[in-house]
Amino acid sequence: MAAVRARAAAPPYRVEDQHYQFKSLPAFAVLAVPGGARPLQTAKAVWYVISIALVVALLALSPSLLPDRRRPAWLLVTA
Image: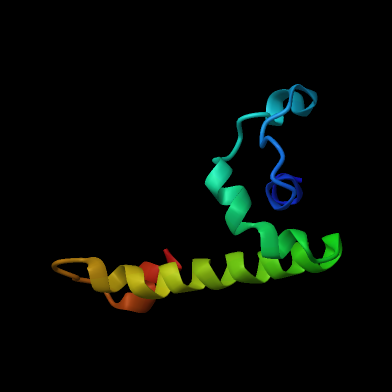
């Protein structure tokens, strides 16, 4: 909904949003405009795939950030 408002140059926060009113930054709404142009189910699927890919990237890169690794990388990632 925020992406639709950003595309229409409408105010990002409305009283009708209730407790969702200030959940994200207005700049995120601008970044989400391409996803807001897609059908809801497609946007959800793309968001899910991107989220899973980022978790995999985080797990793959995190062992390399350790200064003195004493365990194998696969064990650290699994744990």
